[in-house]
Amino acid sequence: MGADFVKGSRFAQGGASADITPARSLGNRALGAIVNSLYGTHYTDLCYGYNAFWSRCLPYMRVDCDGFEVETLINVRIAKAGLVVHEVPSYERARIHGDSNLRAIHDGARVLRTIALERISAPAQRSVVPRLAYRLLAE
Image 1: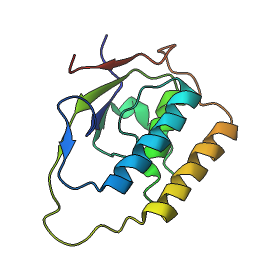
Image 2: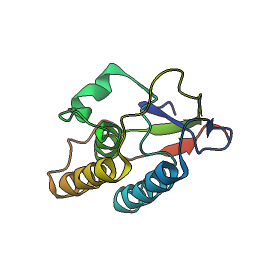
Image 3: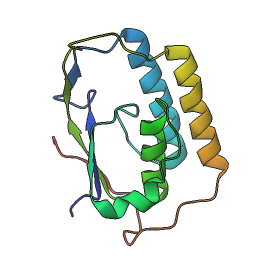
Image 4: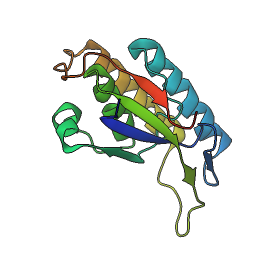
């Protein structure tokens, strides 16, 4: 079965990053573990915005934030909608210019707040796909 939403992962087998710090990697994995336990997903890289999706996914995303928590918000809402998600390995090259604006503690707290608020909000409308079928394409 095809995917509704495909997400890149720096932590899937075959993926990597030349630009992530150990602290950011640890935070990403910890926050991902929380989302995976709450939503039955198997995301290996929650805080990565390299995604491809059909336009029919847009109503489920309803992006209404403007910080680093946007990737988490999208991933949680896609899971809540029951859309079919595939994950593919992705390689993140080193930054060419400038420094990251990410502040690990502050932005991690925003991500955690987003997870909590989405958990208590109403469930998303169910898609025509009745379950979250998650497969790693690299297998």
